[in-house]
Length: 162
Image 1 (cartoon, rainbow, N blue to C red):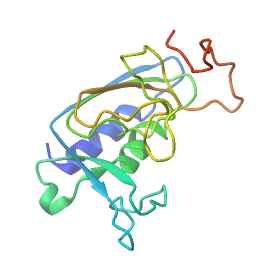
Image 2: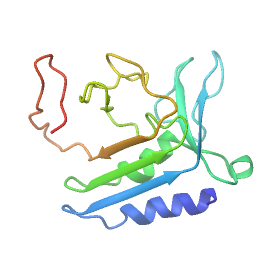
Image 3: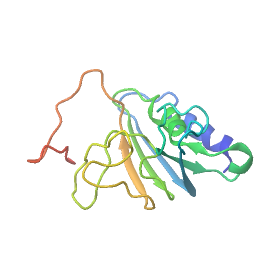
């Protein structure tokens, strides 16, 4: 699909979602990454909200018309899919493309080798290891509640999968 169709589909999916709703988003296609050069632009297409520093990397989905309409950068994916969610809405995403490891800008990233959810740093790297740059990424996103919940941790202090 083209950029307009993907963006419209993301908006449609989360529009009107209420606590208790379960949403599913799937993308199979091309993905890319953009690394900002020292002294370069903003590193993330239209309005990179992270304020990318030199050497930072942004991921993007590549719609069929990306050469004319542009890629859909990770900040935009977050803005369309995650940010609008209310507490209690469950969003499951399967992103099947290259460079999808941090496409949703979630604070945790699942490492299958350990079965844990280590905290992701602001550089997009996962504490205790690097983000996988070419595998299918699956993530469950829920917006942060207003009060921080008690998190389950393993003996090393890392959040764990329940």
